[in-house]
Length: 164
Image (cartoon, rainbow, N blue to C red):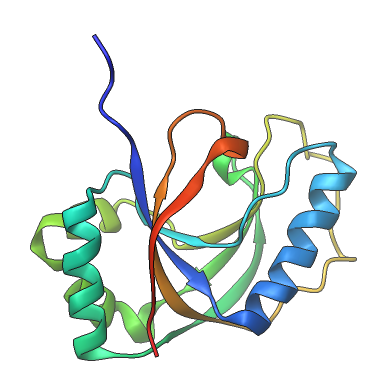
């Protein structure tokens, strides 16, 4: 039996934040011989196209962008959180709850707000990343629905709404 198609709902950074984060992602990916990917914060890992449309409509009703403070680099022993920038979204939590609506809030509560810099299973134990230029804040101004089926190098944007 075929698995249902997998979509994820992402917030993507504005142009300046994207430029800075993509530079970090590219540098780390090159160091670890891994594929780079688009900078983003995953809101929910399992969404539908209807979820995207509803969230985009609510977003436009409440705000045009969201700023998250960065809390430094972290690492987990997980493929998609091997190396990431932890985010403080406390000042915009109520906005996120409004945007996601009751159906998707549960998924959001289970997430650590972050922007990944490396997707890998490689060991980072002895590594320092002081050379990375991590921004103090990240502005998100795009809500996107991504097809996240299969290997991350094949993921692609299905829908996107700029939120200003």
